[in-house]
Length: 105
Image 1 (spheres, one colour):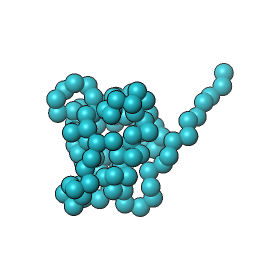
Image 2: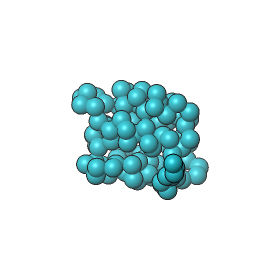
Image 3: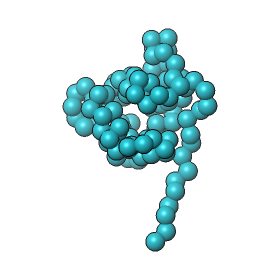
């Protein structure tokens, strides 16, 4: 059995901006609908070698999905960014300083 490893672009070193986070996350949007599903989020966290990626993806989706449709929509991306900053210990800038950069991917 062969193991396939996909080459995803890593998060930039140092402090990550909102735009860099969105650009990084967009590569995991497998169906190209501009929204992030649980499976897509799980794959994104696996690419970072996050322990318990399946659990953290579930918690991130639960925290970010304000309308409870099972997806992180473009208007909920700020909530996902805040979750990642708070719980994944990534070097990320303050969201309030970057509000002008919030765009959908």
